[in-house]
Length: 285
Image (cartoon, rainbow, N blue to C red; front, side):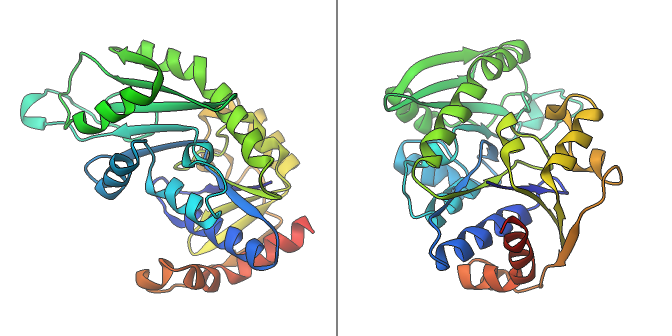
């Protein structure tokens, strides 16, 4: 397993690095697949992913979709991304909210969520926003499709209920789907969310940790990285800035700047991340 994290929130570089790694591995004959344990995306700011979700009757973001496509679609997309949260934008003229945080675990912007349990087929747990402010731009059409496929359906009306569902289903979803994916591919490239550096305990099995920090990729020895992380406290709450400076990378690589149009292609990604991919794969070999 290769674990890819990001140094900055909302940075697409970690997805680009993960895709370049998958592309390079597959080009060399290794059956590689991407895995994104937890994702959050915006109905408004990432409307393309909402439309793709609507067409497939599922719930996923563009990062997960790109990983799934690059992996050859060897499993259903929900296996690649077992936990997903759809966020929205508040209607500010109708709320007195003082502060709005953006995160996959942000209850303030929460609209819909999905956990997928990968045992005896796929079982989808769907949860949705109940009462509470701020009023948000909704996703009623997608909700109708999701509820029709749901093994269980929960209305969430408080932060406490929201966190309780994550506590109940998150690890089961991620562990079960990871086992299915690991049975279908030879190498798993795990992408974290935002700047989190510990999406679930399974990342401790990684053979290398790579952090996207444009214009660099920083490479860490995993045992040292996770041991240092745990010294800082609860690893689930840590982001890259917490560990930066506590432990030094064993290597680093420059990322080549390219036009966005080129970075949308696998050829462009592999060119931009050529040095980083080469050093990461040399380390695990």
